[in-house]
Length: 358
Image (cartoon, rainbow, N blue to C red; front, side, top):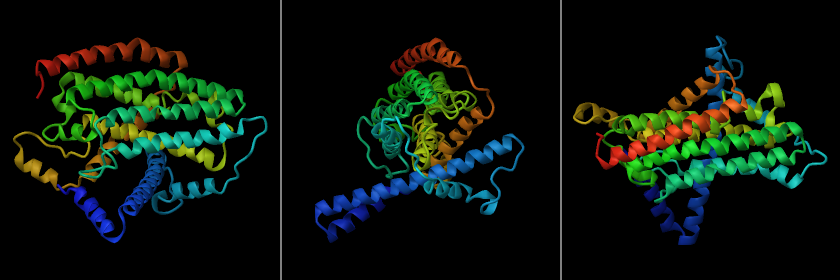
């Protein structure tokens, strides 16, 4: 399988031969930033189109089909329309916090986005607490949502923000415990080490029942964490108009919109990393011919394809189940998911200690 670090090392060597070290590092940082922003934007536009088409299929409709072949350019048209919309300035709002909130939401998803292992040797940064960093920065997003709701000086936005805060803080516990269960199994918090540990068999297969339980809980909690149906109470249009971003317009509203879809990809990417081998191809012990064929598929394709497949399941949830009430949603976490998760963590510790795994 091709190692992208050969390509990145060649770029570093070429730049180092042409300019001093400080300028080389600055240039590389700019290139990485531009690449991340471009990937971020294109993925968000793809996900908007993807969800519209999946939703249309579930409802026996065609979905976007006017702008471009099969409606492929509809997301781009919507993006340009949003960019040229006026940013409406409201009276009696905290203007600084009102303007800051969408940037906090974008910052949180960008930081998490940068740590994901896109392919073999294709990762912005890999350090020994990578998975802990991912969980930490993903928590910044709730601050942006709370600030947006409070600074708008609107009862609907405030109720939406409070719901979102209660929801995200509650379900972060389940996400954290599910991640901790798999970190316990992998024996490392380094993203690279977790992927390498799955070179023989993905954790979803080798981790027995605890890994499967952790995956199911992570999927439910991840859906709630991204404020998607059936957990989309913070922006319940039948009750709260548009929830915490009711008063936003133009590019600021676009930031919230993009962050929602990118958070869907990040949740799916972390699930891919922890349970389905990250960029690692599908290998089975003893199946040398099959494993060799799988190695021909580029590692980037493996990672993105797995993440999109998990995203499809999360989108499927939204268009299948009715929206929960706020008390039902919190009861699901505190009465059911959290106790099961704690029991599952103890079970995984026993599996690791006694070596009851493949």
